[in-house]
Image (cartoon, rainbow, N blue to C red; front, top):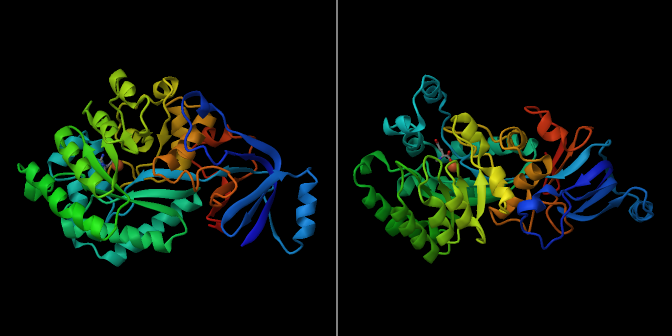
Amino acid sequence: MNFIVNNIKQLLGVLDSDIALLRGKEMALLKGISNAWLQVKDHKIVAFGRMDNPEYPRLLAENPEIRLVDAEQGLVLPSFCDAHTHLVYPASREIEYVDKIKGLSYEEIARRGGGILNSAKAMQKADENELFEAAMQRLSEIAAMGTASVEIKSGYGLTTESELKMLRVIRRLKEASPMKIKANFLGAHAVPAEYKGRQTEYVDLIINEMIPMVAAEELADFIDVFCDKGFFTVEDTDRILNAGMKYGLRAKIHANELDRSGGIQVGVKYNALSVDHLEYTGDEEIEALSGSETMPVVLPGAAFFLNMPLAPARKMIDSGLPVAMASDFNPGSSPSGNMQLILSMASILYRLLPEEGLNATTINGAYAMDVSNETGSITIGKRADFYITKPISGIEYMPYYFGTNKISKAFVNGLLQ
Ligand code: NIG
Ligand code: FE
């Protein structure tokens, strides 16, 4: 596995290896070189430069057998880092979606036992191999559209056995897929029907049984809570994150999707790696995030699909914060893992410049799942996670020409997808 991509119109997203994330004004910069080549060896980016530099013919002369991949004047960009998905799920939920069209809200559907509980019912019966195969299929789908690293949550189990089943599927995905995958334990995604009115008892179950078992099998990298109106309270969240921390599980939480829930503040209190959704974010929350190590992650697909107010991503960046954007790929609130579409939404709906959108979906996404030392930019020594676009005018075309695949070749860990 040693090849050179040549005839690259622009090689972009070049960063020094010590950059873990970009914040505020830095997000509008996308460094790179034009008329470029890029060398991959043993799954890693090992060199790049300009085609008209004498180094290039020298490299070819020294490696006469090397395989050449002609970029045909396409751009080369770092692959998308999708820091928030629920892509292990038993079945799609398009019927419920029709109820939504008829006017039922996300919370109303949830109260009727639909939503997450609907998936949980199906998950308990689901066969582990079938879950794995379906998720592998989804991974290939998103790999072809330019994603090379992805965080996947549990949370459709809601019983110890079923949560462990989901996490074991994620572990198998880590082994079988060339993608960089992180596993997130989201036992606190919804209160299961059997625990209705006894929410604290369910939180106790998560703390006393699920977390220790998840940790004993080393099934999760992170721990998550859906801290929001109608789901888990700040107090529940505090208890769960505290318990997770004792087992070395770093927090990443769902916050402020349905209300100004206090989720952002409790996330920052526990030094969460990220707080995600953030539709209901005011000055107080922005203040709490300033100076913290917590990445705000905006999920345009969910806001779009549920017709919700938009998180103030523009304001966050203008206030000096970093912002990441992810797909939230799941059967209920964002049935798409297409990060090219997220990039378009970043510009169209949230007024991010193309450079800001690209940084939000690459290096900042990588930070939000703790992989920015391995992927998320064109950097010597990082995984060869990048894609070659069709011949397009420049990066502006990426968000502009929305809804289609602008990629001609996608590489995940140096492997053509
Ligand atoms: O991130 N907000 C909570 N959880 C998911 C929705 C999952 C579902 O509806 O199945 C989300 O949007
Ligand atoms: Fe989610």
